[in-house]
Amino acid sequence: MGTALMRAAVLRTAVITVAAALVVGGLMAQANPRDLSLFDALTTALLGSTGTYLQFIGSSVLFVGCAYLLSLRYTDRTEGWLQLELLRCGTHGRWLVRAVGRASVTAAAFPVVLALTGSGWYVLYGGRTVTPPSGGLAPWVYQLLVNGTLQLVVYLLVLLAATIATPNRIGGIASAAILLALGFPQRVPLHLLPVQLSGMGYSLGGWQSTLSASLTLAVTTAAVAAAALLLLRRRRRSA
Image 1 (cartoon, one colour):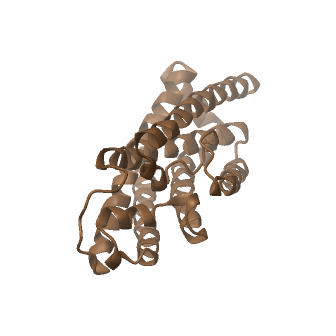
Image 2 (cartoon, helix red, strand yellow; image 1 turned 45 degrees about the horizontal axis):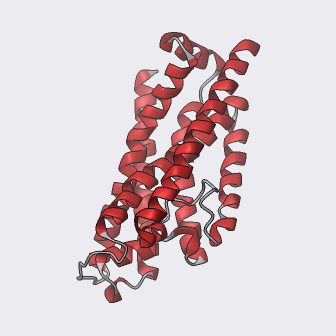
Image 3 (cartoon, one colour; image 1 turned 90 degrees about the vertical axis):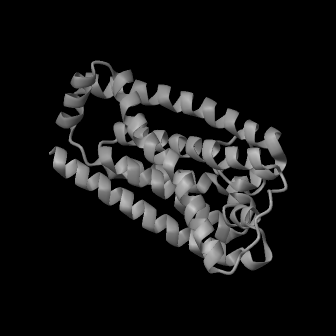
């Protein structure tokens, strides 16, 4: 069982990496990197919902798609296997922390993969200029790494809660569709809506914009984690 799960994890990681590289390549091509510096090209490619429809769709596929693939680890498990894991961990909270902790490693690495593959495409497309982003380098890096990771964690928790509530793939698929649909109101940025806040357009507003997005994502993470714990307890009592 352990070997099979490890192989599945490696396969998911490979799929996520290849898919991310291809999507970023398409977004970078649309950004016309020859006319922009490296940071501006990456910002344009990863602009998110406030950009063009292609940039909106691309960012949705990247982040919601990555979270969905990570959630498949738990979708495929049987009720008995979940109960066994809960017994090993001792409490529902420990199981949830362990589950999210495992996925957070990939979630933290994902923005780095986007930046590295985007930089590679930038050079291949003829870009050669490296100047600091207009909103400042520190907020830019913070938006990419911190808010990118937090956004993935929020998506993952939502999908995990849906998987717990409905022990099949229907819940995860429906939740992913809802997350995609909620991105449309973000065409006009709404910091209180915890979707599409990983878009690099927020870095253009400096620290005020990036920290506002972080606050929304942090509060949402706590709220969804609490909801997931309640669903876990309810599912265990009904088992």
